[in-house]
Structure formats: structure tokens, C-alpha cells
Image 1: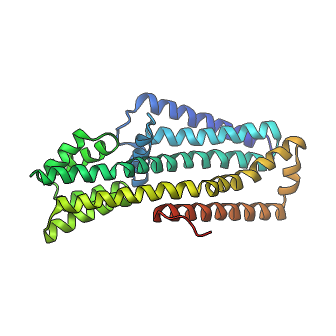
Image 2: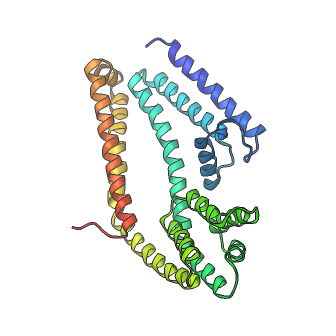
Image 3: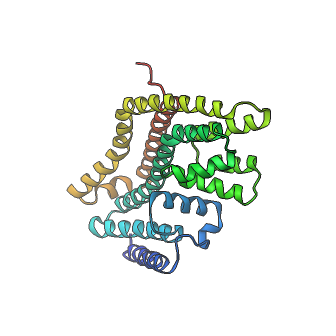
Length: 294
């Protein structure tokens, strides 16, 4: 590979990092510009806010691509291997993507842990004679984060005059959490057919407590499987870098021609499929709140 290509990659990476720094210095976190005009950008902005990252989505994307380009250029400079440079680039992008997904998952888990308390609080307030809107306003003051912020958003929607059913539907769409969807469904059904909403929420709170206990047990039982998924994904990359460090040029000679590239692509697809299947199995077992049969 000609030396101009890694130099160009490094230059683009530096430009991306400079753009990220300028974006952080000149753009407020809550501004609606750049990629926030699209749904994916707004989702990324929401994920970064939940993760506590004080940077907008534009700066975050620029920094991610800049870091990936720098990692690829640095790896090529040290090892002179196109395969190793591609592995470094993919590793940085995968790490950034995993960080975003993990922040969303941790946020959803914190909210899920609070759902029994939320249901109990709403049940007590409605049972004391408050309306649903008043109960939500009281809950967003009394409860801790992150439930307070989410209920504050719902309260703001109701104060703006949004129909209760529409506000509840949007509320459930914000967080992909089954306990929240169950609570919204219970409230919507009780509003439609009537009945004891306070009693329904109290029963839901007990059910959510049992579900969370079983989910914790399932996560403990599947901890080894989750670790195995990460090890399976990391071993080929770590092994390839170790071989390249011991004998520079090995990856280029092995994977730099036609059959080697086909094998590399096939191995990457199989690795990704294996990690995906293991994660889906763990997520399914955790969501169902039961341990797999042994």
C-alpha cells in the first residue's frame, strides 16, 4: 500500500477531531442542529444525555470517526499491515457503538428497577383522590432519577394540553422497557373501561417486583455466557495482533490476497453472527425472567 493512503487517513482523522473540538466548544448540548435534524441523530443525542456525556451528537460522531482514523493510521505506521489497520478501525467503531448501546441498556435497567416504586407511588396518589395528572406531577418531584426526569417529561406533555392517551403512548415509546409499557397499558385500559386504577397499579407493582427479582437471578445465571460472547469476539483480533507483532507482515501475506480476504470476510461474518446469537439468547432469558434448562 502506498504511503499516501495512511497519510490521507491521518489527515482526515485530524480534521474530524478538530471539528469535534470546535463542535464541543461552540455548540450547546441541547441545540437542534446537524445530525439532530434526523431521527437517528435525536436518538443518539438522547443516548448521550442519558450516559452523562457532555457533547452533542455531531461532535461525538466526528470524534468517533477521527479516533478510528487515527487508530488505523497509527496501526499502519507501526505494523505496516492493512489487515491490522482495518482491525484497529473496526475495533474503535465497534467500541463506540457498544458504548452507546450499553448506556441505553444501563439507563433502561435503572428505570426498570424504579418501575415498582413508580407504580406504587401512582397507586397511592390516585387512591388518595388525586387525578392521574396530579399523581404524575407529584411523582416527578418525590422520586429519584431517572424516573423523575421521565415523569417530568410526561407531566410537561400533559400541561401542554396533549391528550392523555397520546402522551402515554409517546411516553412508552421513549424507553423500550416492558414494565413501563405494562404500566401505560394498564392505565389506558382502566381509562377506557373504568375500574379501580389504584388497585391495578398496586397489583402491577407487585408483579414488577417479582419480575425484577427473577431477572436478577437470570442475569447472574447467564454471566458466564455473556463473558464467553466477549471473549469469542476478542480472541481473533487479539491473536491476529499478537502474531503481527511477533512476525510483522504475516497478516498481510496471509490475508492480503484473494482467498485470504474471502476467509477474513467469512470469519468476520461468523464471529458477528455468533456474538449476536449469544447476546440474543442472554437477552431472551433475562427478559423472560427464568434460567435456561440444564
